[in-house]
Amino acid sequence: MTPRSIAALVSSLTVILLLGTTPAQAQNEVLQEVNQLFRQGQLDKALDRVNGYLATQPKEARGRFLKGLILTEQNKPAEAIKIFTALSEDYPELPEPYNNLAVLYASQGQFDKARNSLEMAIRTHPSYATAHENLGDIYAKMASQAYDKALQLDRSNPSAQTKLNMIKELFSAGQRPPKMAMAKTDLAPKSAPAAAPAPKPPVTATVAPAPKAPAVAAAPAVASAASAPKAEPAKPAAPANNPDAVLRAVNDWAKAWSANDVSGYLAHYSPEFKTPGGESRKDWEAQRHARIAKPKKIQVVIESPKVTFEDQHHAKVTFRQNYRSDSFKASGTKTLDMIKAGDKWLILHEQVGS
Image (cartoon, rainbow, N blue to C red; front, side, top):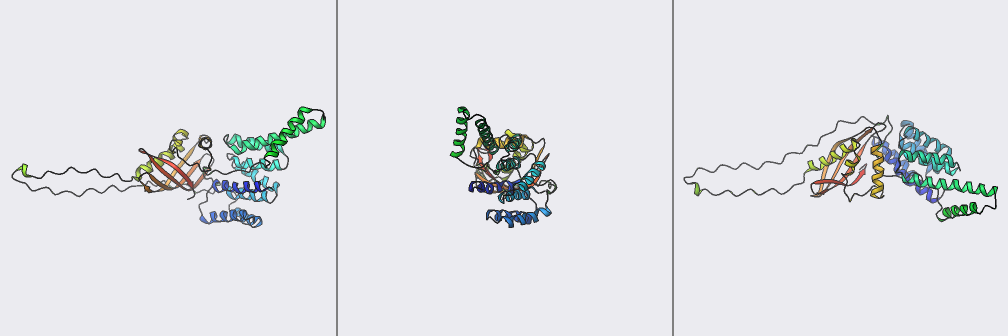
């Protein structure tokens, strides 16, 4: 396996760490340990550890995905294919297992199966760029086989030879295996259907009212009204940071998400928003559109929000997010960095699990 494929496999670990969150901290620590062992190349230890984890969490997606990556790196494609096939059946909405199946099939020269898997990935998420790129490579490989067959049948066919040479030059210019699933941190946390706890009722953040100014004692009556001192007009209070305004913005964002309102959801992001994976804003919005518009029903509940201000124009909101759709349940911690634009608070950056 080439260094590039190993790097791709390591990068794809982020996918699984975002596929779901388990409520118990101990379970997260086990997966982090497996991740570390995998990165260090201790594949046997990583496999033993993840097998122990899956013995108690057999349907948990992250552990299963990790096991598939470990088996791939151990050059056990048949076992890895079995893992990713089961994942694609249990989580048909996810494109990553389909993509990884295609990579494994392609490594075995089964380009028809690889093409079918990639087409499923694209059908699931039309904006999944990795699958589109891999599909282009698969078509090129299949074309190479067809041109080579044509030359075997007719050595004097200059057109087939020219086309075959062009494809060979294409691959020799940037030789690489198809890419394993790459991670994006805007993926909604996902967990195995039976593992996710029922969401708790949302906690409404309350803000203590501003203290009233002390009452001023009435001046004693005087003989002449003209002799009474004039009261100075009250000075307006300096603007203070208002957590209610920030929380309203976060709740409106969650409502738009729950309503499958893609335009309303995207309107809560600042023009300066930093995309989680470093992709272009256009690509990120296309990915979010695919994930928000597809489910028939979405419910996003914000629990225990905590607002802290860096200054009058920057705030940080940390909360527990409970996500439900017609096919997924998940719960996890999320942090939003907010920026004030006029009278609106917009999302500048978002992070899962912190």
